[in-house]
Amino acid sequence: EDWKEKGAATGIRQEIDQNGRPVTRVVKKGVKDFSFGRTLGEGSYSTVLAATDRQTLREYAIKVLDKRHIIKEKKVKYVNIEKDTLNRLTEHPGIVRLYYTFQDERSLYFVLDLASGGELLGFLKKMTSFDVECTRFYGAQILDAIDYMHSRGVIHRDLKPENVLLDDQMHIKITDFGTAKILDPKKTNGTGSGDPLEGMETERAQSFVGTAEYVSPELLTDKNACKASDLWAFGCIIYQLLAGRPPFKAANEYQTFQKIVGLEYAFPDGFPSLAKDLVERLLVLDPITRLPIEHIKSHPFFDGIVWGKGLWKQKAPRLK
Ligand SMILES: Nc1ncnc2c1ncn2[C@@H]1O[C@H](COP(=O)(O)OP(=O)(O)OP(=O)(O)O)[C@@H](O)[C@H]1O
Ligand SMILES: O=C(O)[C@@H]1CCC(=O)N(CCc2ccc(Cl)cc2)[C@H]1c1ccccc1Cl
Image (tube, rainbow, N blue to C red):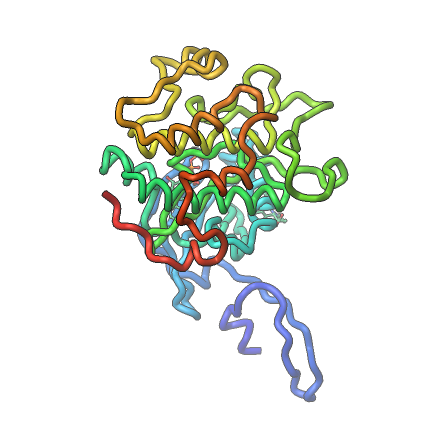
């Protein structure tokens, strides 16, 4: 039938067949359904291309992974984690959405939201640092996305300005979930929120370590990441947006780790005092005493932020 030729969208379609009977059809997208455009960026195992759906003319980012390379580098596990995580995080404007996956003999394809603005890090470098209004807006969007992630039992584990992308409205889209951790629903108290230590590995040693400057002390001292580890990284990001550099940065990774576990950081002169108070309550060594999300949302630094859908409909402040 014509719907096959058209390459109708993936998933389930309810249709009426030639005898007037309701029929459920499953259709699959493929490479031929898209026209590929410019390269948006390269990863260690992937190339991300802009692409247009030939049928709907909608634009996407398609992440193409080379199977041979992934197998050679033993990264198959990360591919599955990225797919499974993105399939759980489908209902939030601040998280890159996965629409389809498909493959051919050579590659795997992830059809994702297009974040045409690129990385938040790029804007931060261009501006050197953000003012309080911009830090408050982008901090609030990042926190709202973290709250949703955690409520769906996902810990990102590698939050940093490189992994916060921007769309054409200059709103954020968090990406890079290949190293995320999906909490086992059987082990949690099921409320989906509240327990900052949720995710602490008890049996197995944690394998993955994030990016040095944003790694939490608990991951370094007892090899454990938990939900509160994402809030440590959040504290580092707020500091970096206002200061123009991350709080813990040394000549090499080992010295950076020493500063983290020793809590060796200082605020530059003129660092806004409300932001300083917030960062001081996030960059604490004990994950239990780290400010939980609800208390971060009600911190005076975020006074004026309307949490929820409004945050995603309002106009982004001009970067200054
Ligand atoms: N949805 C997207 N929209 C626009 N650009 C994107 C999107 N996803 C990724 N990119 C860009 O493509 C580049 C490669 O991203 P990708 O996630 O494939 O690898 P990476 O995670 O950056 O690198 P690595 O795999 O080494 O960690 C990134 O620098 C990012 O800026
Ligand atoms: O889990 C899935 O959705 C399917 C299941 C069927 C399938 O064959 N794949 C690809 C599995 C795979 C993963 C990594 C490599 Cl290097 C090769 C094949 C999976 C897949 C297809 C397209 C894109 C990603 C993935 Cl994991």
